Structures are given as structure tokens and as C-alpha cells.
Image (tube, rainbow, N blue to C red; front, side, top):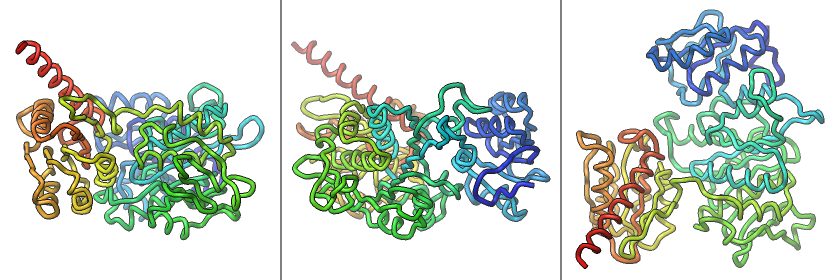
Length: 500
């Protein structure tokens, strides 16, 4: 019998493995395990038509399906593999722990299934986590590695499962040449279910309360994030402006010789990356870091060059420099990089007022970074708070807020913070999910915000909340906002033309 609780390679032949979750990650895990001879039981809470149709593929490959019950542990389970969203409080988790069954997440399974490249080495992992900026940092690092000529995958919580990236070219995986290096976004959920991952370099970008409904406390959330540094080989990258990330590096058990590498928006000290007169400077990965630095580009190579995004660029640069990428590839990667939608994306200007979509700001920390990039803001906020507190955000930016337009299921929490910390800021409450369509609510929010703004202001969708109370995703929320802005602009232009 395999000892799945021990680190190192394992054999899955004839092992009884329960996979919880019949969606993208669960189906990938099931296929990989079946290809290696495991006896897989695929479990899911739902037994509806869509779930049954998805699970049919796993059943055809040899998995036993148990749909409609994700609470009891299948008899004889030797290993349980869970998809990222399954909380530690789930009954099936309690049952597995009581039975002494090891529990892996998809990232842990991917680490255990790595295969050597043709030269006998293994593709290194560059791990990115934190409360905000993860996807942007991953994409920036990917662009730098591509400029260096590497066959790289950006994967993990960014949308391309890490398991699929690792299995490329292997049994149970997609066809294609294996990747030389992986840049992996790992969520706190994925890190919670990980134990033996040993990244070449990793970064915790920043920390602020988030997903407290899942983790139970901020301490547990930060502990999960800190697992990114465990067993790190070359560089444990921290944010010098965030003392929690410094603490996590100091407490991590890393491989002997691994260095702590900081990034800062100020002048870098030894073993740090930072900014000097607009130049991105590296004093960590140069031969004589006491007296010299490498130029990695300028802040104007970063798009957009808001302070928090420059910090993301420095973090990405630290990861790839730890891997050995030359400074010119860092610069060229930044110049080639284009931000993904819904991340402080300008939509239109109406009567001197900019309308900006930062729907990706799904927690107060992200919204704070976004608001801080502008002088005067009419703030569109609300949705699902995920246990977050908004007082610090409001207090920090009260003088920037021209007004606030609130909507969504837990908008009252934002409203209460505004009343406590910024009572002078005008607030319009548009209500929560109701008979009105989400598009109608957003159109009203845009119109109301325009009426509150003056020329030179920014109407900013940075909700500080998740979107699923009214929208399918933050992406849809941003799309609806952008459509409402463009419709308003077209309407005003038509009215102006008619008046002439």
C-alpha cells in the first residue's frame, strides 16, 4: 500500500482514490489517476443533468460515479483529492481525517505527478499568491519568460489548471511538448491542501482579509498563503511594504541556501528590487549587489503604471530573475504585456469624467489600491462581502471620494463603513438583487455616478466585493458596466446632435 502521507514519488496502481468535485479540475484529476491505474470514485454534491453529463466522461474512462452525495467517504478510500473550493469544514473532509486518509489538492497532485524533461531535469515552479495582483503578476512573468525564449505555461488559479500544464505530453494529459517552466497562481484554497510543493521561487504579493468565510479567521488565511514559501529553493520573494509577507518569509522552512528577496516602490536595499528615479532596479541578482544594480526597464514600461501595478512588475521580475532571465527580457516582457480585462481598464470619458472598470477588485484591499490611483473618485461598490470589513478602506480614502453608489446583496456593510468613517460622502443606495435586471441596476448606477462627478473625476467600478449575487462573474459585471457607460455616452451624443 502506498504511503500517500509521505513526501516523494508515489505509485497509484490499484490505489483507491476519491476525487471530490466533477468539474474541470476534478475531471482532470480523475483522468490522470485512471491513466496511472488508480481505482477512482468521483464524488459530487449535485446529480443534475449538467453534472451528470460532465461526469459521463470520467465514467467512460473507468471512474465510479457517486453523484448527489459529497458528505460520506467511500469505503476503502486510501487518498482523497479535492478541488480548490471544498472547505476544511466539509463533512467528507472530517470523515477522511477521522479515517486517517491523506487529503491532497489539485496543486499537490500535480506536484506528485511531475515527470522529468528530456534532459532529466524537472520544470521549475514559480509560484505567485497574495490577496491581490496574482493574475497580473503571473501574466507579466509569463511575458518575460517568453521574451527569454522559454516554453512557459501560466497556469493554476488563472484559468489553465496546473494539473493540465504538468501532464502535457504525459499519459492522461493533453498532447504537446512539455513546458520548460511553469508560472503558477495558487489560491489560498489550493495552498491549504498542499504539503510538499517545492517552488524554485515564490512570492506572496500582499495580504489583507479575504475568504474569511472559507478559512474561518485571518490567521488561518495568512497561514495558508505562507505555504507558498515552504520548501522554496532559490528565492522567497516578499513585499517590503507588507510586514505580514516579511513575517511569513521569516517563519518559512525553506531549502538551505534559499534567499529572501524583497521588492519595494522605493530605492532597493541589498537583495531587493525597487525603483530609482523611475528606473526598475535589481540589487538582488547581480554579481556585486553591494555597489551595483541591473536596470530592468522603467515604470513607463509597465501598463498601467499605477503604483500597485509597478509592484506587481517588480515581483514578477524577481521570480524570473531567480530563474535566470536576463534584464533585457524583463524589460521586453513588460513592454509586450497587456493587462487582462476588468483591471483598472479605461472605458470612456464623458464630459471630462473618466469611467474605469476594475471589476476584478473583489475585496477591500484590491479596491483600496484602485481608488488610491486617482485623485477624486465616484465609487461604485457592493456585492458579496465574503466576511470582509470596509472601515479601513473607507477611512484611508475618504478625502478622495466624491460620492458612492452602492448595489448588491451586502452593500449595507459598505454603507455602514461610509457612515462611520466618511459621513460627509454622499451615498446612493440602489438596492440588491431583485426584480430589476442586473443590467438595469448597473445602468442606473452609471447614470447616478455621472451626476455626482465633476470634470476631472473618475467614476470607478471597484466593488470590493464578489459578484455572484447579481452576475455570473466579475467579468460579466465589468462587461455590463462598460456597456452601460458606452450606451450613456451614445445617448448623450445623440441628444447633443439633436439639440444642434
